[in-house]
Amino acid sequence: MIRQSDQLEAKLESNYQYSSLVVVLFTVLGLALSSDHLQYPDVPPKYDYNYAIIDDQTLNDYGHQETRDGGITTGKYYVALPDGRLQVVTYTSDEGGYSPIVSYDGEIHAHDYTPPHAHVPQAHVPHAHVPHAHVPPPPPAFVPYHGSHHGQPLPYYR
Image (tube, rainbow, N blue to C red; front, side):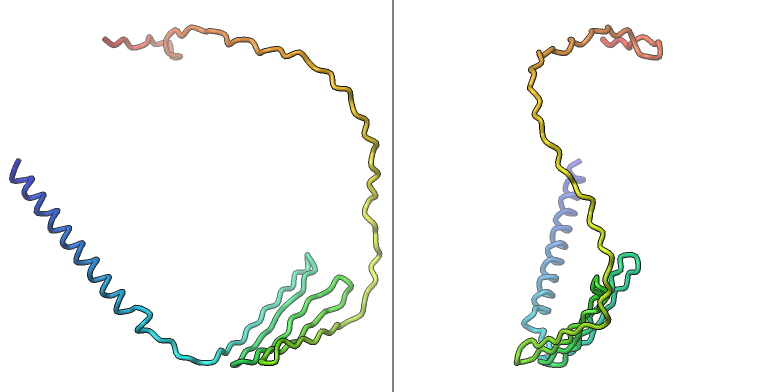
């Protein structure tokens, strides 16, 4: 028994030393790859993206397009308005600031307005409060237990 405990203790010490070595190696690797050694090039930003959403069920129609090259950003976004027109915002953003130009395409379509159903408030008549006597619930009924539900007697332990 003493030999087995000695072997177990030696094995645990070996595992501990191995785990310590792994932690030290990952720490050294992390320091080697730290942000002090990685430098991203200083290049001017450049991108181009766009999206468009058209949903016939909800009548949503909108989108956006934008391009950036260095310090100059240009783009436009649009949205279909409830009156049938398309609102378009074309913009430029540079050292001088944000410069939007808003335009509307299409004709206004008058829709028949149906006012919502008018709600007529009803007069509130307060009811007289009649206190009710508190009646406690009946106490639980005691039902003696006569063995299991399978008709078998209960086991007897000494």
